[in-house]
Image (cartoon, rainbow, N blue to C red; front, side, top):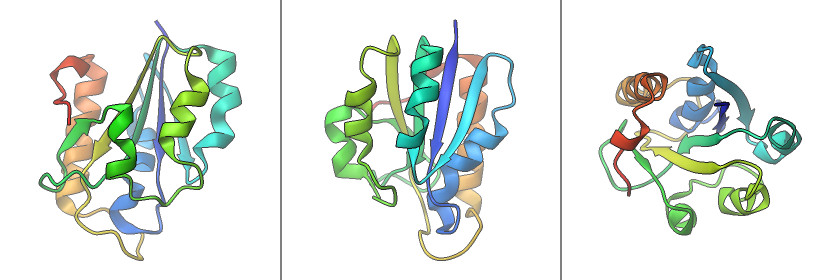
Length: 146
């Protein structure tokens, strides 16, 4: 089963770069991980060519939970939690890719700091590492839904 992860975010805006961080750390034979930066729509061709069974978007999301916590965000709630540093809303991108992948999920990680700087705060980096472990183990069903 082919699994694809698209890390989304702006690495120049602190914790907003967490999606890119996760993509770079997903060195696992079961996952094809891509750092999409602020333009995930530029990667739709790769997704369409690969037809993954599971497509996961990871991005910073303001969900009102402690920094570093992560949640599966239903498509209808993505607009509510989006930090909006990318050009196309992820909900539109998910609609565009519907039918290309068997399952599409958006996983948000709560940021602590979103301001100029190339770093992740400690709780967000720790949360990203926990998420990576969950994904590599295949325990997605253990991720709470927002």
